[in-house]
Structure formats: C-alpha cells, structure tokens
Length: 475
Length: 132
Image (cartoon, rainbow over all chains, first blue to last red; front, side, top):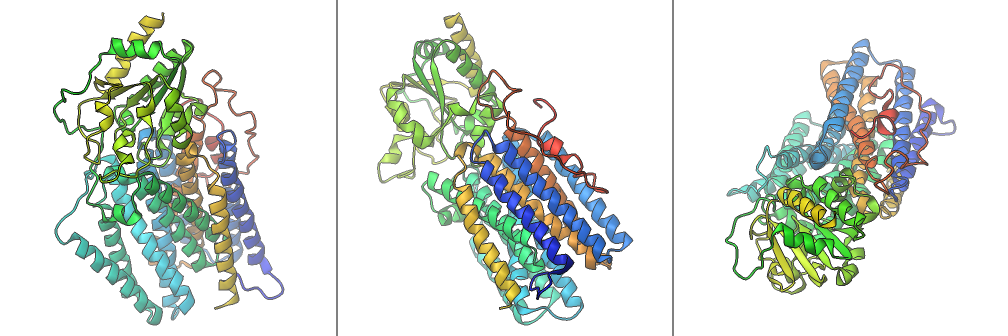
C-alpha cells in the first residue's frame, strides 16, 4: 500500500482515511486529560474506529477477491466477537475491571499474532518471505503470543481461577530461559529460512514463556503486570501494522505502547520496585485483604464504632484512605454514604488515593466513582500528602503498606516506597480485620502510634456500624 | 531498507512521541478508563483481521481469519463500551447525575451495513441507559 510513485491510487486514498482514524484516536486520548471531557474523548476514538472499519469494508469490496465463504467467516467472526465483547462490557462488575482489561489485552495480542501468522503462511505458500517483512512478522508473533498467554494467566489470577499467590517451582526460571531462547532462536532462523514448523515453534515457545512469565507474579503486583501486558499488546498491534503496512495499526499500536509503558513505569515507581524485580518475583502474596491473622498486639489501642463516630462527627477535616481491602469487602458504597453524612454535617471530606490502591492503575477511583463519590474529592498522593498535617481524622480502610512510615527509613522491604503521610494527621482510625500483615509481610508502625486507634472489623460491617453511629450523633 | 519501511518507521516513532506527550497529561484519576480506552484502540487490529479476507481462499486462511475477527471484534466493541460505562460514572457533584456532561454532544455516526456489532455502538458508548 505504501511506496507509491506519483499517483497514490485507490489504496492510497484508503490509507489517508486510516490516517484520519489515527488522528481521531490521538484527539480522543487528548480529551481524556480531564474527567469533564473524557467521555467525549471516548466517543471521538469510537468514531475513528468506525471510520477505519468502514474504509476496510470499502477496500475489501474494491479488491473483489473476498470469497462468499470469506465474507461469511469475517462477518460471523466479527459479530460473534462483538456480541461477546458487548455482553462482557455491560455485565462486568467494576471490581472485575482488571480481569476484563486483561482479557481484552489477550484477544488483542492474539489477533495481532494471527495477522502475522496468516501473512507468513500466505507469503510462504506463494514462495518465500522478504527479509524486512519477516523481522516484524516474527516480532509480532513473539510479542502477540506472549501477551495472549500472559494476559490469560493474569486474568485467571485476578478472577481467582488461578491462585493469586506467586506460583513457583524448581526449574521454573530455567524453563523460562529455555523457552525464551527457543522462541528467539527459531525467530532468528526464520530470517534466513522460511519455515512454517519454525514459526509454529516460535508460537508455542512464546505462549509457554507468557504463561511462565506471569505465574510467579503475586496479586499485589498486578497493576504493573496489566500495564506491561497492555504495552505489549500495543507493540504487537504496531508490528502487525508493519506487516500489512497499515498506518492506522502502526499509530494506534504506538499510542497504546506509549500509554502502557508510561503506566508501567508509574506503577513500578509507586511500589519503588524495578520492573525486573517484579517480573523475577518471589515476593508478594495474594490479596492483602485476606488477613494472615496474627494475634492482636497489646500495644495497640482498639476502638468501637461509637468512639470512632464521635471523632469523625466532631472533626472539621477528614481524609479517607482506601485500599484494595475496601473493594475486596465491597464496602465502597458504605464509605460513600458515610462521607455524604459527614459532609452534610459540615465536615470537609476527601479521599487519598495511592497510585497502587487497587488491582490496576486508577482502579480505586473507578470503584469510588461507581459509589457516587464526586471526582474532585479523589485526590492523588502528591497533592494530598501536605493536607494530612491539618487533618483531624485520617480514616484508613483496607490500606496497609502504603501507609507504613517504615518506608521512610532504609533497611526494610518497603524502604523508599512513596507512602501517604497518614501518620501526620491529628488522629488516625484504622479499620482492619486483624493485625495481619500487608503483602510486604511487614508490621505497620502506624498501628502502634500514639494517635492511632484500631477498629477491628470487616470493612463492610464497620461501615454499617459507623454509618448508624454517625447518623445518631448528627441527627 | 525500502522507502515504504522508512515511512512506516517514521510514522511509528512520531506516533510514540505523540503518545508519550498526550498520555502524560492524563490525570491518575482517569488511569483505569485510559487503559480501557487504549484497550479499545488496539482493537484497530480488527482492520488487520478483516484484510485477511482478501487473500484467504483455503480452510487454514478461513480459520485464522475467523478467530482473528472474533478476538478483534470482542476487543474493540467490549473495550469501547466498558470505557463509556466507566466514564459515565465520573461526576463532579453528587446532586446532579443527569446533567453532568453538558459538552458531550453525540456525534452523528453512520451505521455500518452488514456489521450489526458496530451499529449503534456510539449510543451504547456514549448516551443511553441510565445508571446500570
């Protein structure tokens, strides 16, 4: 389609339409820089997508070589896929968004790999593949297959089909290296010798590598893994764009690759861990909400709902610090109700959102938005940290490691991790089921502080109790 | 290196730079919808899946084309719809859920003959049903 000399021809005009679609993707993403315009951004991107699909149908009709079976296969496939996607998108619970995003990463990567596999199969059946084409084909098949298998494992872990804990076994790391070597080696072989069996080996080894890459990674590291797989999918789609020389795929793939890479870096920074450290794994368990159940230490001060309610109702400024435990307990609606009661009583309420609160970037914001929390109340870590010093009560619900002051000191597992400065608040109430550890397996010094009260309860039950206690007080 | 490949590479690198620039401005509050929107955007691979039809004249070709179309169709439709669903929940104030987005005029979109999955997609993405 590219490399026109002089006249650009029909395919050239279609390529221009693809450029228009790509422009709409960029504009759509640009509009996502504010919650007020983000919906329009999504609509603009969808418009670009529809234009690109129409252009493709025009191209297919113009080519005139699509057989009747071909049309049936394409339309049936597209419709079935659309139906499944529509059903999943409408039914999914917001807590299950990370699984759904992982599933879409899987199918996107899988489709990209299939485009290159088909291109290779087609070129090989008519005699040989060009050197430069095969570099991108091999990269597409490699990255697409790794993403497909890895994303399925990630989705399975998030959904609970596969245990969230890191799964490791003797020789696992060696197997991983062997698979990588086999995949890359067969890929390199393809540059010189066209061979369908070698391509099949690339596919199988890449699928195996994808599985082995994600299995040892713990549930709490999922925000990084999902972002990374998102970047992989984008890259695979861009490579597919090189294979079929389509600018819409190249631009869209590059945009997604950039987005996924940025989010990966943000998430890794928020945990103060390198990507290599996370991928190699061996640290990190499942949900921090599932308490390991240590004994309640005598040094901590326990409070009941009534005392906590008095502190909250007579405060002038309250910051709520939600963690994944809140979502795991399905307590977000209760929290939103409590915040509303306090606000109506004249208390200033905001939420401190740590970047890795949740199972994917920004997950906590969506969960709270679903519970009708207005987005101006959701404040990022860097913005809210100076606020804690003039806060009467910090209410910590289901967050652990991200509030641990030990991170400010060197010499422990979470040293250097950016944390919410909860300990700066005038008083702190922590809602927690027991003194169990967070995923870092570390005692949280915040709980032993003189200003801290521990409210031992399941987050959802605690919210019900607190709501009725506060309502009695302010009535 | 062919001129075509050079063009493609240039486009790829420039698009990466634009992506870094544009995505860097998205606030952390919107990172989940952002990832979901980019998820839908990589559903553009549907174009690649459909183009398989031009040369697919064997069973292997049909099977690969079918699976690719299923995958990509689920990706693009599911990603777009769920992004719209999420963004609808972001409100500035609790009080007025309906009047939250004054600027969101619905674009006029053509439906696509023979491709019901995309028909009316814009409705589902943007406007339509109340709180689900």
